Image (cartoon, rainbow, N blue to C red):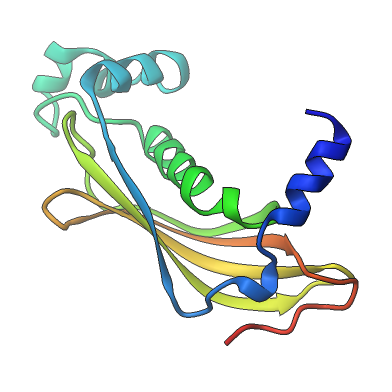
Length: 164
């Protein structure tokens, strides 16, 4: 992609003024497989309960579970595909809260949501927004939650007025 194409795509994305404060955005779902859990963990978090079926079976979990970092990556992918790709996001600034509520086992179907908490001016042409993200399993149980602070472009050089 050329820099001109990137600028064109940026112009087409929604801005800070379009963030729906107080609304929950659906991120879709993702099914976690045992093969994926093991492959991810072998690369990034090779603890026995992520990579060794026999040892994991004798663990407190009773079987293979996804790494917490893998769970974060799944949430991030759902965000990119179903939220960030529609908005003119500049960058993440801070994760203020990250909680792994339950272990993620193979076969789990994780559904993501993001609640837009606030939008505030953050300098010319940009705004900060805070959000709370969650993953729930196919039984409706909260598996993961995260609170983020990110930057997004506004329509003009003046700070964004929140769309409350």
